[in-house]
Length: 394
Image (cartoon, rainbow, N blue to C red; front, side, top):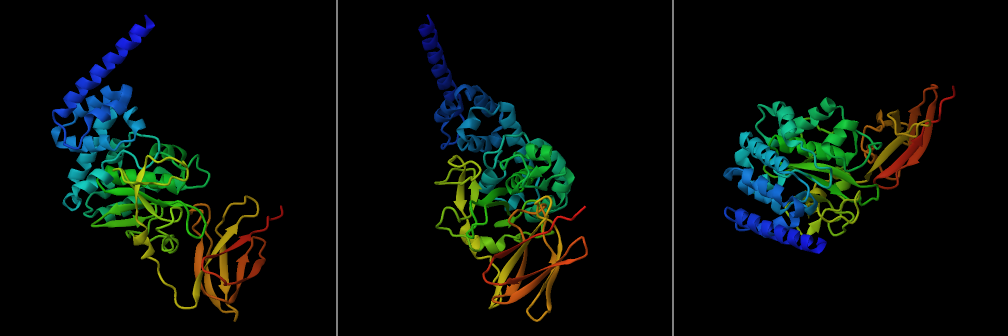
């Protein structure tokens, strides 16, 4: 009896899939493989069919694109309501944007429409972000400037900041908003979704490991007559293509999988995006964009190198902002500024161009009123000078 029931359920499911497949094929694009799609959706096939049924003809291409390149675990879990609302608001934002005519359809499909950047939790952010962030870009006529303004405004508004104490790297936008803390990865996801919600093409970019071995990093690119980059929660005023990591990006190696720079593509490509927080996962596609970044490095004058400074609090062990002075071997002041604290990316340090081979004197005042003095010789580009402040006695 149990065997008969199982056989009947199997036949019923096959017939149901066949019927749904026939319905899908009546109005599909030639490249839309309904049979394979519904089979991959498994028990969620009815939700996928419902989403297709509810999608207006004017948005059908977008829904089919979203489903065609969707990771299988999303096909098996996302609801019809989620998908229909998401696609509808993606078209709404794109069509209302003053830059719509400047955004090609393929850019819209691959960089505004997607509901996800990497492997983050699938939040229903599209409608709420549209309603919340659309007023911030009213009157702005270029997607690049609109993205820069969002980068300036949304993080203070949401009370979100960079921190290595975030719960996990691959946080969804709502997870980041709930905790108020995020890594460069979580911050990038949040800014990308904010951009997409108001019709700005945006995508996730990163490197598994800087060529100097100092760690990985993530940021975003936005489309404005070509791709331009910015660090999430690291705005450079209204400007794009300015960031602390330009020097490191310029030394990326396109032929080395660990040291290349990749931009995520929702549409499938032969190159998986290397997610260092989820090693071995290959369901996120990417394109290698290293060449564009290696052309951006600013050259130093002959005989100069970059020296970086990191100052750590003697009690907490965290990076802290402390005033410092740098004097050359003749006692002349060559730089005066402050180190960067935990609000900044863990690889983002105060960087000063210095003459190679010169021994400098580093002065850092302490709370006790005494100066900490250390001599450092400029020996190699990207040299990092670490200084730990002494714990003050109570």
